Length: 68
Image 1 (cartoon, rainbow, N blue to C red):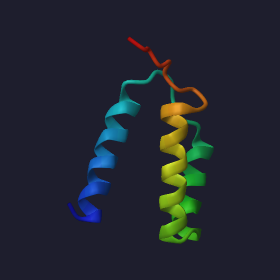
Image 2: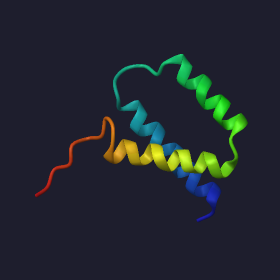
Image 3: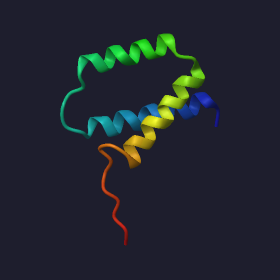
């Protein structure tokens, strides 16, 4: 898979997951995201995506892990 294809999959998965959650996104988050895309290098953007994915899965506001 190309990098573009991987990013399309991440975008689709993030959109689907976000639509399943309750509540709205604060306007300031959209402003922050816009500034990040304008100011940060692609490498820094990828690093932030990695950190956010880790937080979603394992960190703040993560779903509880159920061990069988």
